[in-house]
Image (cartoon, rainbow, N blue to C red; front, side):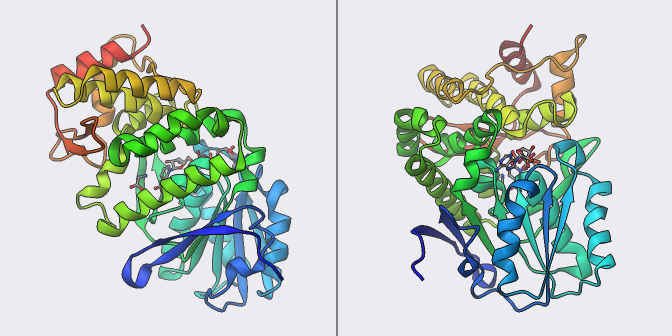
Amino acid sequence: MTLPPFQTVAIDLAERSYDIHIGSGLLCLDAMFDGLPRATSVLIVSNQTVAPLYAATLQASLGQRYAKVLLLALPDGEVHKNWQTLNLIFDALLQNGCDRKTLLVALGGGVVGDMTGFAAASFMRGVPFVQVPTTLLAQVDSSVGGKTGINHPLGKNMVGAFYQPLRVICDLDSLQTLPMRELSAGLAEVIKYGPIADLQFMDWLELNMDRLLARDADALAHAVRRSCEIKAWVVAQDEREGGLRAILNFGHTFGHAIEAGMGYGAWLHGEGVACGMVMAAKLSERLGLVDADFVARLKVLILRAGLPVLGPVLDAQDNAGRYLELMRLDKKSDAGEIRFVLIDGASKATVRGAPDALVREVIDACCRV
Ligand code: NAD
Ligand code: GLY
């Protein structure tokens, strides 16, 4: 049998190294699962939107090598990324007699991927898992690097574990059914790689944004591959975010505050990140790290991707105060000091604090009034 062309990005993490396969028609290829540990059962974890679209194809591929292929469709949405939904995965595993060799396969976006990864990290103290991301955001970011977890009502992704998948399979065809708003949200995480790591990639995005929005297969393949290469390069140096990895959170400090402050699901993660990148860039400018032209250029690119550049008002009385309150919960905070990912316009990012008064000014300038 001739395999369709696909590209592979390797992520080098010693004994936890794995491959990210990127291409078209990969879901129906049982060869994608070559070399994974033997198991009698597999549980595909998906959601009620994605399962009807892609689970049967994946079940058929997996059924060629695993005796029992089970499917669990979780409720869809960021609002369900919590303990109650996580428990549905443990219920399914235990009710079906799964053991510590059972393979978990996450089929869906970042919500399904993060929860399935956390379930894999903790069920029987760890079972193998594979990521099959079906959103652009998940293909370029959340399925790679081993961050797993759930939200807490008080903060985003507050409970979780670092736990690497054994493989990531990005079937670009699945992006064809993605709602436009979700495609744009994924582009936010693609755009972030430019200012923090690769200005040539930012140039390429400026030239190819229309092709990406039109879901051109070659353009998507390049964007996913380059994003994964950059993420793999960062994670290989700092798997557990002792330092460098924090740059991947460009825009996320403000973005997570928007997501939590608006109520999970009201703003998509990528939308919060998009707006957060504008705020973080503006803060970098106010600190003298980057010039206004670069901030304007980034803003235009974000707008062209169909993403918001103005933040919502989280509190009519003291909007900036509410942002600050939520951002103090950020995992990068150090002894109560909020730390921001800041850029220099030459693809270098730094992580540091900033005076509250300056942060307030930036929030005031970047929010709808
Ligand atoms: P999502 O998982 O909610 O998916 C977005 C929507 O698209 C959902 O309604 C989903 O059902 C639907 N969908 C998925 N694939 C589809 C397809 N092929 N066709 C049609 N519809 C489809 O959201 P997301 O943007 O993929 O992920 C966001 C989550 O990822 C957030 O919870 C965020 O915190 C997390 N995240 C994690 C990391 C990490 O490193 N672990 C990085 C970035 C983001
Ligand atoms: N998305 C940020 C990280 O994986 O570190």
